[in-house]
Image 1 (cartoon, rainbow, N blue to C red):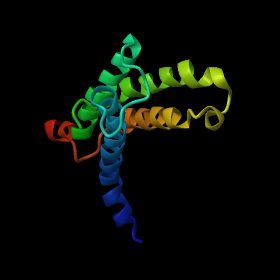
Image 2: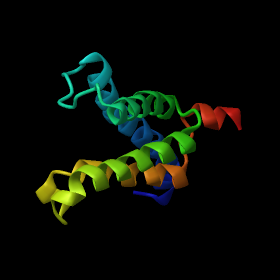
Image 3: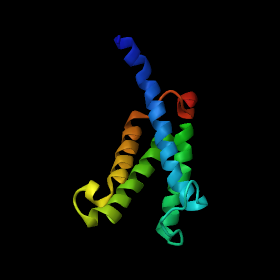
Image 4: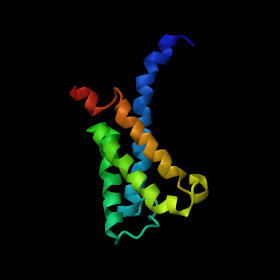
Length: 128
């Protein structure tokens, strides 16, 4: 394929990546607060779980529409790093063995979006 194809679609696919990461992460927040699509296994009476659920819900919505994307991605990346080191790392070194690979994947994906930005299909792009 010609190089112009790749250079044309690279920023667009960044937007698609951001939107899909937001939709996937949004399910964690909606399951904690609304039991949708399934009820979360976590107990929402705990204070840290409520904060995590709020970050997942609000941050995902901001990331979904591409508003304050870098800040939202930074906060969500930090949440996933904290979740990994509090919940999964004490169980062992390898994320696959501790079932923490999703936390690592979300953490690094959001960290990538902090540096790459939201892409052209975002409210941040329209504002600038």
